[in-house]
Image (cartoon, rainbow, N blue to C red; front, side, top):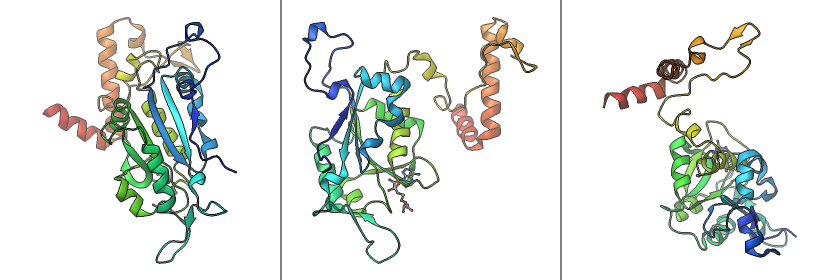
Length: 268
Ligand code: SAH
């Protein structure tokens, strides 16, 4: 049988330790690490890519925590059914309100209101998820994310819980899990201590409204292409000027929408 208890990843969520506190290395087990609660039919898909590299290390270190809630555990009847045919007819299956509702209620236990703990439904109908959303989530105490499957969830669940619908982009995925992992990755890297070099967050794409300038590293010449001289000049003023001009050029050429918004803001 599928387990119906939330599964936890990351050191913080593990309650018992055989070692006395004083002998443990790593950061203390703060009870209040930033926590993502993810409701999904596929808890085995987590932490997924979030378990790798910097987000994975931070999860191990308890800088953030991840709990999955297995929606199957809330299924109805002997077959633990979670979906049914759409009212009004048509193709596909819809996730039942009386399955998703109790799962969201369980996930809400011990979490504060939506200002401190946003509740998201991953959905192609949602507002596009942006860097500002990642920043907002990182500043909250945690987030609850509902991953849909099939044709999505019964509308009444979204209304009843006041779920925020957010989209990964203008395309349709088979489920919300990849979208949840993408948004969690963007969020978790903004939690202090997760990235080694915090400065790199400040001047990267989107954070000031411009896309990032090109980056280069060794070797100086590769396949006949040299690193722009200015970057090797040691003149920090000139380097900053060049990077800014390149960021503006790239934003103007590739994202007229961002460029217009940025120009409007700089006129204000
Ligand atoms: N019938 C729906 C699509 C359902 S796709 C429609 O046309 O709007 C199944 C599930 O995948 C959704 O419930 C949602 O959780 C997830 N999903 C699909 N595309 C997504 C996207 N672009 N962003 C976020 N989640 C998405």
